[in-house]
Amino acid sequence: MSRRTYGHFCAVSRALDVVGDRWNLLVVRELSSGPRRYSDLFADLPGISTDVLAARLKDLEREGVLTRRRVGPRATTTVYELTAVGVGLRPVLDALSAWGTPLLGERGDTDAVRAHWFALPLGRAVADLVETGTVTVHIGESTLYYVVTETGVSHHDGPAAEPDLELHLDLSGAIDVARGNRTLADTVTT
Image (cartoon, rainbow, N blue to C red):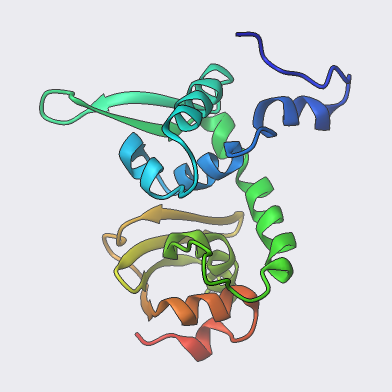
């Protein structure tokens, strides 16, 4: 199947040729904290069909945004992870997250939510709290950690091996921080 294209000699349209299809950037969001199995991606992208997820993964792999590899004792499990090209989309996701935060409004009764979906806005809050270092953040049952350097912030699945700081939030606190209603310092327990 040939790739759909806008057919414009423009950097924005070429970028959208690769990541502009529905679900593509959300797949990248899911992989931005580390490798994931297909079943994990499917579980954390409510509303996507298995056919669409498989197609998006194949397209993003073909474009060099992600790669897949086999892991496990007998290499029986496949995980998907971002390539350097895919990691390069992190500033795009950060900008979309910052731009979209005021658009969140109130959570609807049927809106799906996952704690790790707040990783990007919480990363900005973590960077405001610490100049540099490693911070583990627990949001309910979910755990991720941030590495804050002079050049930026990255987030990763699970707890850090030796965090400089460990924070605990409930989901409503994470939402409040993400929306800018409260600061991280006023919300967390250590």
